[in-house]
Structures are given as C-alpha cells and as structure tokens.
Image 1: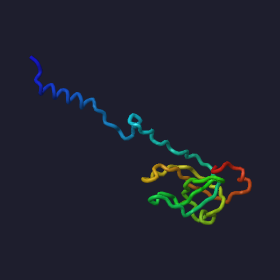
Image 2 (image 1 turned 180 degrees about the horizontal axis):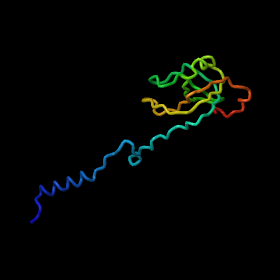
Image 3 (image 1 turned 45 degrees about the vertical axis):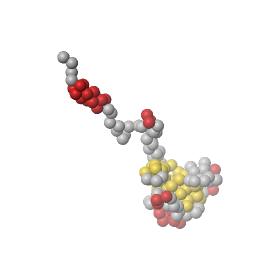
Image 4 (image 1 turned 180 degrees about the vertical axis):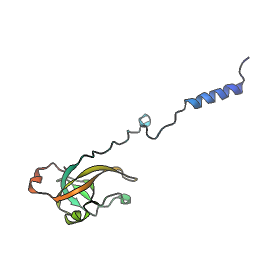
Length: 135
C-alpha cells in the first residue's frame, strides 16, 4: 500500500521545516554580502598630540563635542573630556597632548565610532613637535 498524498505532503513540509536554520544575530552575515562585526577598539592607554577643539556638532547630536586634530591633518578623533572638562575648556583651540584610552561608541546615525576617553590633557611641549600626527 502506498502512502496517501496528504501524508506525503505533510512529510515533505516537516522535512523542509527541520532543515531551516534560524539566523542568530551574533553570527557573521558574510553569506549575504554582510561584513564581520566590528572588532573592539584598542583599549591600551596612549597619548595623542594635536589641536583640541570644543563645540563640535554632528548629525543627531552624536558627538562628544570635542575633537583632537593631528598636526597638518583634517578630520580628527572625538574626545570624551568628561573626566577633565575644566582642563579641556582652558586648553580649547591649543596644541595639546591627551592621555587616555580608545573606545567605541555606538551611535544610530554615525554607527560605531572611535572615541578617545581622556584621562589627562596637557599643553603640548616643544619636544612633542616631532611626534607623529595624531599620536
């Protein structure tokens, strides 16, 4: 005796459903043209030298309000001055050396953005003049 068409159809649907794979959000999506998830920023302490500027604006307010631009460079990096706000205000527009750690902020419009979290800000000395731009 042959199986009924209803039984065969039900069996095929069950096999199809068992073969489906739930896509976990934590998995890489390279099979459909996506990219690997971003890697964490270097969190080792470092020093960066350049011109510190406050009152920076960005789309949707997605900024720390402060940027450090390396010598003879454009753009720069966002700086979180929350730990040293008064010192940052004193040195706004000047050439400084910022000591801190890099981190990643997740903003809806700008996406993952590197931010330097400042632990200390000092006016740059003459010997800093030979430092690599931005570092």
